Amino acid sequence: MVQIYSTRVFSQYLTFLFFLISASGSLTKHEATHYDQVQKKYKCDVCQKSFITPSRLNDHKMSIHSDSRSFKCAYCEKLYKTKQQAKSHERKLHVQKLLLDEICEFCGKAYAFKVYLRDHLISLHNLSLEEASKSAKIRDRRLLRIPPKAE
Image (tube, rainbow, N blue to C red; front, top):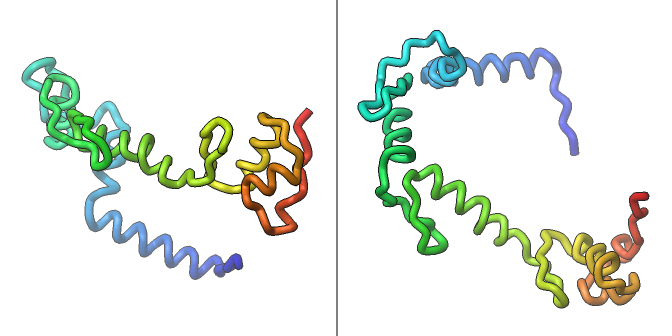
């Protein structure tokens, strides 16, 4: 169900969010990353590139100038230079796969929803609607309709 808020309530909500972000200084720091004229007082001693915060400088040194890989993926044995690289790998490779639990019995391709698996079975493996629905274990009659094919 969609909730509709009045303009006044929504405006108060945005003002409150802006206050929280402004009070922490996060917004100012974020905005500063988008401007070249900001004084970048933290300089890399290897390549002389400058950064606005010490943490950005540290991330740069770890990802560009270091061979150390001390951040381990939580799902496999891969090691990464930065925590951000490890988290990105986890999201792209492992977490997405955990969400894909409808697997084609013919080719092993995975889908998030039974309907997508059914459509795959029909278009790639030439199964009939009934066969594909049975293979994908679709019981809901509304899902048994074939979507229109793109021309």
